[in-house]
Length: 301
Image (tube, rainbow, N blue to C red; front, side):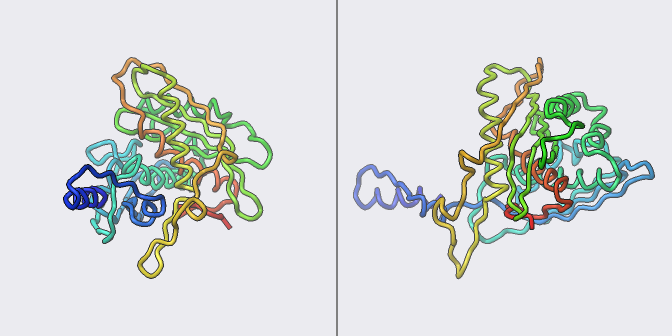
């Protein structure tokens, strides 16, 4: 961590306590970056539209494939044949874990592909997922709760479309539905997000709700705007004028619903982040017929 080295070197020179404070420009242009990955996915469906096999090849730095699966190289979905290939490719720039770690991007990759499979099978994305997690009651419960509270199956307000995503983060289970509109110039607006969460025993519901809300805002900022570009060896972005955050006027309505559970606490600090990008991108597909293949989303034209 170079900021630690700075403090140590300065303290050695003046023999006194030193506090190093970077400017925002220092931080954006010289900080540690989120790992990037490249993913190739293939799957096969039977005559009834059920997945028979799934192949996932992921190229990226060590640790980037973390938590694609729930253990023993199994997806959360009931797919008979699953293959995950991890190809380690270090980027040559300083990287570090990001809120949500591997699932922050793997959730988008996996849940976007599940939506593609549902479309290829000619099935509703919610119903398709429901069939695949029929034997997993905690996943099924959050999926049903989110869909019901979001009004899935009923027409959304004019100009809006819905997308859904499901995820298991450790022992916490989540489903999120995003209600999105796309303007004629390709600009994306997220109007509402419904999140259903089973994190085991809940001690303080307000804290759980706040953590899920903050994960969604954090994930939306990254999905919509979080791009770093490099020209002539330097980071172009320097402050919030060209490295956008989600602004107050863009904030969607977020409704969080908790599943009553007697299971051990599963944690919520990062769990709400993985489903938000795929829920939004799946809603964009419902609105435009276009799949988002890379993030940030930007304009969908």
